[in-house]
Image (cartoon, rainbow, N blue to C red; front, side, top):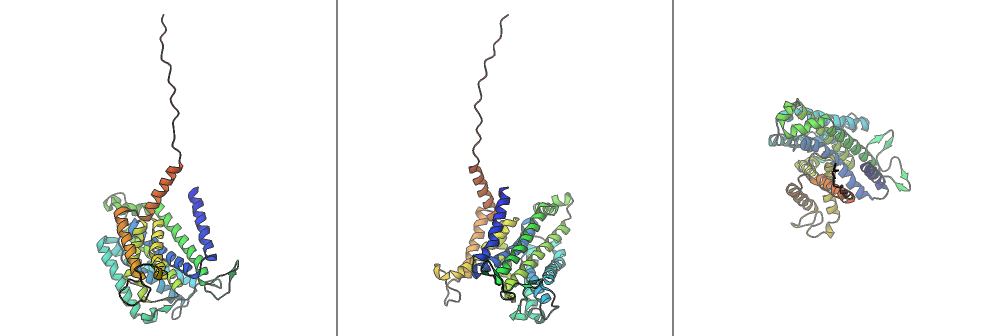
Length: 365
């Protein structure tokens, strides 16, 4: 019951934040929620199914550019909600086309195979000008639902005296998408597919003996992870409002691996926590670079360490510390802390002292 109350309280706090936070903090939250969706998908693939993927950025790009093309001009000009759904399905199709490889290859070999997708995707993004806009990218059509547009001007909206611009409106859309992704992932892990993927990660031989179709389950995990990445790419595009190929490089795939390792492999909540940490850290360091030691402001001359590089050093060190001292990541640390608090709150049970029994007496006859 306490967990449900805590979850309800967390949702209420998240819903109230747009009334109190400025545009910068809302953007940090939006980027974090977009990253969290992609991290949940990757933890299903890597943390639960045990498949290493270095091509997550490719599927984010498929979702982002798929939405831009489907909803924009040149393109079919479809309604944005339909374009979102089709872009996610397009990412799933891309994952399905690669799934025969994912079903038969594992470990480092699968990581190298997915790495090729990043370079292939970059080549397509730079050369398919009519589709992607080439090096300069494309503007992102805004999301609209029933005539309500998720921009700051159309229509004007003031709620409880607070003007709702693009960030405030996108906040609730991102929150709804993240909640749906969280709910779907938790149900998947709690059901038979999640148990099959966990068995597959622990031992392929044992899973096959128990009747788990190894290749099919691997392929399905790859498709589901690709669809999560596509949804994250769509949300990321809506927040950026303009996408370029440089957003979807190898560094983004490495960032996602760092997210799930720091958060805890196989944990949905850990993936979200790791995504918030890895995404928010460089943004916060860029904002407060002039107040931090050894960190130069963005664009500063010389060879000083910029906020982005400093952030990468910090969460790189966090990955090493997690691997050495907390292999189950932030989620494991949180579980142990909650268990410790629970033990301290529970009073020790003391048994009442046993009453001495009267000695047996034998009657003389």
